[in-house]
Length: 127
Image (cartoon, rainbow, N blue to C red; front, side, top):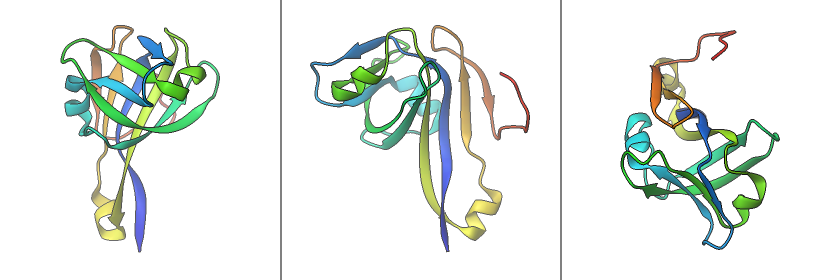
């Protein structure tokens, strides 16, 4: 049996831009992608903490060190600059792999710099 497990997460990223007139996707600072093992063109889920919207799109790498988190195209209708979002990637793996899997979770500050890296999310943690 295979399961879909969280592979990487950017927690509480701040949306820096919403660009309606761009072909759909999310642009993410390449340094952030590297930190959590996300790749260009990878499918991700985005959860907007401000309004509860959830959507799926794919990644376009953004300029390293820029802190860019830009929702493009139709997704721009679901966010506003300054919104806090969670960006999650998933991976299919066997039950055996899933038992020892440790996702990469980056907790971000308001400028989209990494405050903390987590190998797992402790229960009942308030970040």
